[in-house]
Amino acid sequence: MNEKLRELNVEFLFSAVLQLHTMEECYDFFEDLCTVPELRAMSQRIHVAKMLSEKRVYSDIVSQTGASTATISRVKRSLDYGCDGYKIVFERMDAEAAEKAEAASGEADGKE
Image 1 (spheres, helix red, strand yellow):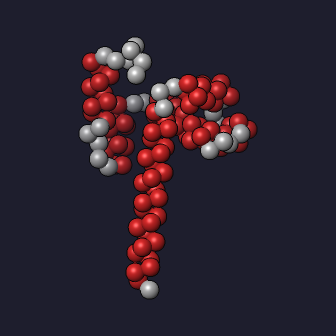
Image 2 (cartoon, helix red, strand yellow):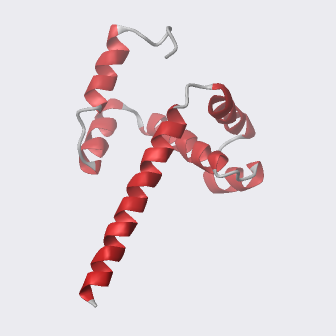
């Protein structure tokens, strides 16, 4: 972790986020914590990161997210040289989606 970020207030924020259990709790917490533009900027960056990790081209990313090429470049730099935070999250999200798909497939097989 970047030592500039490691401070008591940031750790308190991260501890608070780790207490959230549902999507609705996330909506409530982040609506209280962030302005709409801040939340849109963060959600745009993670969408850009996901598309970059899927090897999508800049022109597709610009058209789908509205992000500037400067934002896309910044996110790409984080993906290439950062702390692998995006990678961790995307791998876990993909694994969760695969588990849900497998469970749904198993349920469908059992109904026949």
